Image (tube, rainbow, N blue to C red; front, side):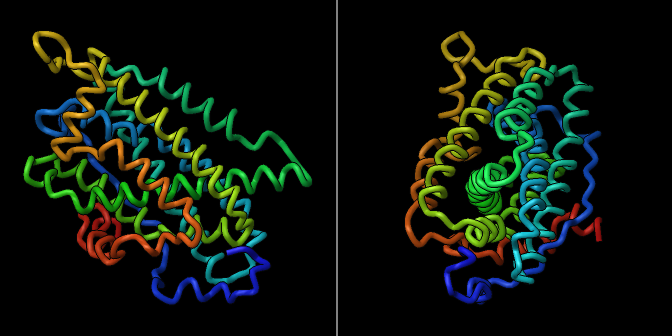
Length: 304
């Protein structure tokens, strides 16, 4: 909430009071198949985007919120942001480990990484700004990353709720990574939003940066998934439709229809929810499902 709102900042935590801590998880990819979602290359690559796009973004996000810590006087929120920063750094390293797996299988990921480094380091980087310009740009980036966190949290909830992965037999190691990450995103769903509200709280900035974040995520996500889907090494068995490779938009629609990935409407619905006046992430689904999964996740249990 805005610093000058006159409302006790502890009020926002009455319903949810979870300690946000980083879990030092590790994953062994040695027995994970390249197509870990059986029978669907596009869905596999859709989730591979997390390994290629998110690490740089999560490290940049952690840096931005760490820079905002001196402006957060509320002790409880300050502690949660510290835990949030730690979790985001762990997410980055966990997904990044799968990059080595893809490279070992001959997949050229450098074109994607160059694009991500440009977006995160050049477009949304620090730019060396100081004074008022530096504060304004920090607030802008807080807004962008807070909106991005909303999308990752609702995707995390989608992953926890999706029983089709269990029915289909998705590789258990990869499924644990996806759901562990999703559970932690749901667990800390309030933190980035509350930090933005505390430091800035502007409604117009929140709406504007949400549009920027959703558009940026959509472009990076769809272009990366399409690159992997068209890559003959990443997709060794072509998906065919009437004798030709199925175009990626049709492959996306097919995977969405099979409940292996969220549909396109998902993005627009969540954007509309996020920008409405009075929105707060605690309005989302039951956070207990995240707590339950983190108590049973093989990787999280091994990290204890």
